[in-house]
Image 1 (cartoon, chains in turn cyan, yellow):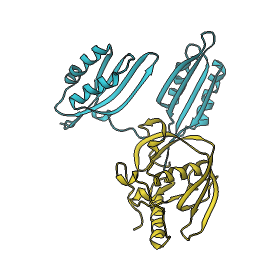
Image 2 (cartoon, each protein chain N blue to C red):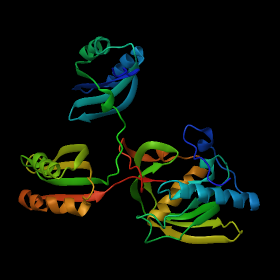
Image 3 (tube, one colour):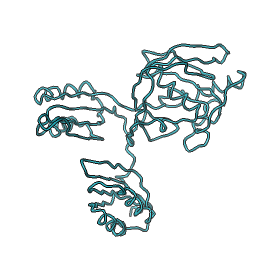
Image 4 (cartoon, each protein chain N blue to C red):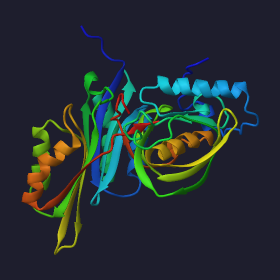
Length: 186
Length: 167
């Protein structure tokens, strides 16, 4: 039998109408449980505040206990809570040998920009590590902005990605730029 | 003592202000050699500051000539004692990481051109203009001499994906 890990990890998501105090309330609940926030990303999307946290803590513990603590806090705030138990092999720190690129896509808003771009990337096994979109411009002239951070698989180049997206750029009449943002370590 | 272990935050030395070198003697020249050896030992490393190996003196080395970002535009191996930036211009953002703060990277704005003055290990004073990636590397290393980490300058963060080698 595989030995059970001493540290348990959960993915916690909290989404709801933004207001001051959400992070303090959620992190307070986690602190009461003795939970670590190992990794997190929280942002405001339109008027919604969205939190995604990977939390860890020592055995003995259960998902039920985590939900019991956080559910009343979320209910008070009018937030939706999601909790998922992570399998030990899901929590390894991600490392990559890949080139990291930023792909910027923007132009007149139209249905399918995200789908069409990401479908091309998926077909070339390009992994999206971060993505955000924003609708800007005016009501008369809405502009869609899509920013993607991607890890290129071996053998793929930024120029190759640009070429892949060239036809789409023409068809959708949007601007598409690819640039290398691989971190430099000093 | 050639290759030295690179200290990692929260080692307190990394946040210390380093002292000026008053006399360039053999001890300082040995320190420079240790820094060079340590830099060459780090995979893809383009610079090391004295505080990163536990010495609070204003000494650092930079060599971007073997890095893909710096190979076209560099001054070779720079051994800098009491370096000073006389002027700076331009601004560009680069995603930086640091051997002393592993597993974390963030976007940092730096000057794209700097006029630099420092003493060589033989005592000669050098002054020249560095630009591009070399200028960024020098500013990063010189920050270490003031106890400043790139974390103190980050304008946006991105964690998790860190290139393993050939930075």
